Length: 234
Image (tube, rainbow, N blue to C red; front, side):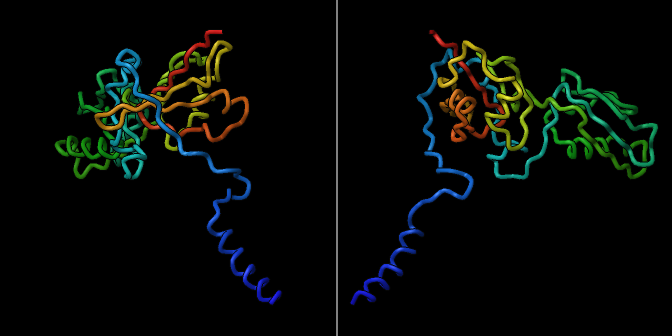
């Protein structure tokens, strides 16, 4: 009978191990499910003009589509017209009004479009002058549209609006803004996020992330997010 009980345990133990959650090797314990904070008041919600944020457009991981960069005012573009070097522009800025100008096309809207969309529109415009034009648009300097930038306000060393990049996290944002000031209340930081017609806030403990290495606080950012870092009162 002793050997029979041992056999039963040999069958049961693997089943228990399969049912019990365990961290992956080298990753550590799983992070708890993060809860959103209470909605912000209208005064705080308006900081940084976040009401204009757009989520779910091309390039947003939340949209489920293939990420694609959206051109914004201030970007630098390189435009190449195949077999027409006189029409090519190695470096052309997108004006504050979101438009560009190039030979034969004095004015065209570039902001809000992907490089491929702008290239197809330029091809249509150039058909009046060039037979079967092939246009390639390359973004050589990145800023991006305002509603897709990640904004950092408050007690960051260098508060800024940062172009969103695919896979960006809170830690990437902290590196770009050179960390917290000595007066920052990092564990009281909030991410303000627009989701459709709703606005949500997510609490982030930046001190735990930066000083203690709590990777569970390394929240994934989305285009249009605003990170607010309040000042400590003592």
